[in-house]
Length: 270
Length: 270
Image (cartoon, rainbow over all chains, first blue to last red; front, side, top):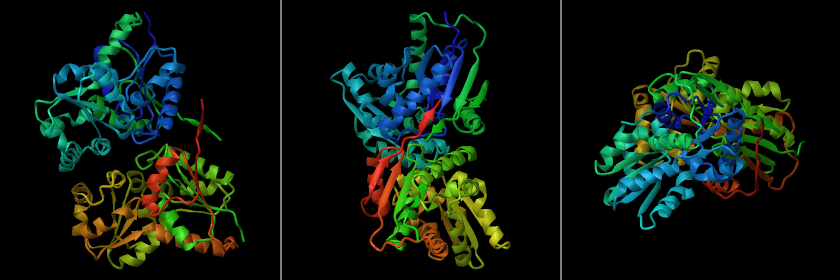
């Protein structure tokens, strides 16, 4: 039994889709969320910079005395998870493996599609894991950098969003896609649009739910679940304005933030 | 006479449009460019964070022994220039005043339009300066957050770009706009599209050229021009990968980088 909080982090607000699923599945756990909103987005940045930022956040969460760390960001999971595992003694999981397992189950004999940021797709992390789990699998992966700003501008139901999908995924219609991994935490907000665009036959894999399930399994396996029964506490750290985070967070969570939201400022040393 | 370099900075690559104009007008000056590519973009971030980042870069440029500083970023000029002036003894100019003066000249009796990032427009900096210079002036300002990703995805000639303009500027067609200030260093790359959309009657004000002219005037007035006659040296500092900066920089400059490009890493201190 371990009443310390679970630490969950992302480059910005997107990881709240994972936070939300964890909260629903584990109502008694204390949760800390860290969003690096002053340096968001990570998706177009280099491997070195993403690894550095991820290490800094992991170190910060260790200082907050968390019992495990969830990398609620596809870009960081793809690029830095391996390195983070060597830097912390805490249990740590990302969003890729849960999504990959669910996609292989759902795809059947069909191709698995993967869409994400440029950094996620270029890392080849999804493609490599899919192949490792099933060597015969067919995979198509596509970077879709305009989709995050489309979500952030709340254009999910616009003609601009449809044309953007057409540009990125037009040729996916000609392939027998069995499952499409939404390999960016913003994309679940585009689910309806993508479903309409690709048709009902394609299963959309939202890593957030899968990740939450694996978090629960890990707590049980390691016997580090909380012994509390009342609702867990929530605390949020962001590197830019807590006010604007709180406003957007409500859209992602479907409810207002229920815990305090604190600014953490990286202190730069020349 | 002063042979020290001019320091020019931006949140990323966009300020290279200003760098390019300064280079053309002042071929013998040594130039240092700083792009904060690890933390880009600034346009959706808070006043506090933008001011902090701008102070850090200004301090860094002072350490590089520059003779003057050009804030080649509309967001930083709008939000932090006043604060930076109180923090440095070096001459420092932004891109707003040059753009405002040119727009007033070009607009005649017409309305002045201003388009930029959310941070730039919400600051009210352009609106306030335009009113201060001509109190009777009519101003319409509009934040267009999707335009930067459209440029960065090289979609300047796409239907997505046209629809994005329609969404942001559709109602500008019904107003007698005399001049439109492109209050973001990325927007000059959309000049043709905007011209086609709004029609030939609207003068597009590109602050980059205006700013370069004022830099030259300031050097002359303060007698700090270089005495060299051969081509000035160029040096670039970026906070993310120099390779990807160099690749995009070539698009902005119309030629490859001619000086070395060095990574500056902010050292975070917990």
